[in-house]
Image 1 (cartoon, helix red, strand yellow):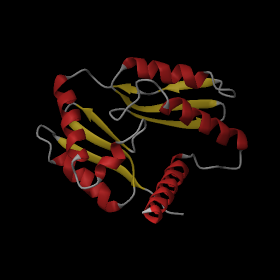
Image 2: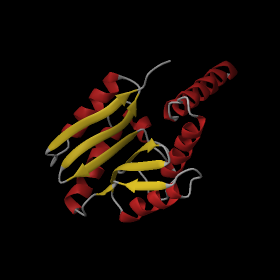
Image 3: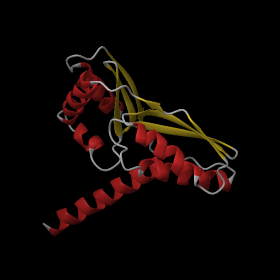
Image 4: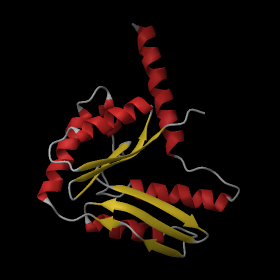
Length: 181
């Protein structure tokens, strides 16, 4: 029994380290840019209202950070820009984050898509935690899946699960496959 527990702990630690490495920005020759990228990512994923139905991305060009993505609440957009502007070395923030329109129809699709993916063969693990691996963006009945999954099969399963949700007009699968180094 102790042997199984040790193997499970080792697996959990390996999984944690793999997810941490996957989430880190790619290091380039400029250590300041790398440090800024780490800080920007940290500020964005720790926003109080950032969740599975939001998607945030950024681009750093010198001392300018451009924010992209879609959020369900205007406060998330505003807080993202405010937090990033406070980072040392950031002189300018261009906020291109889109606030998704209020819609009960879209809210219902978000919940049904979440449940559909959660119930599909092992995909629930991508929806766990404060910063899930899969983000579900719904705009006017159109679903976009963003994030990172382990395998092409998981990407395909998530795509199928989203397409099977009633009321969805289209599904765009932007899920990236985790690269094993």
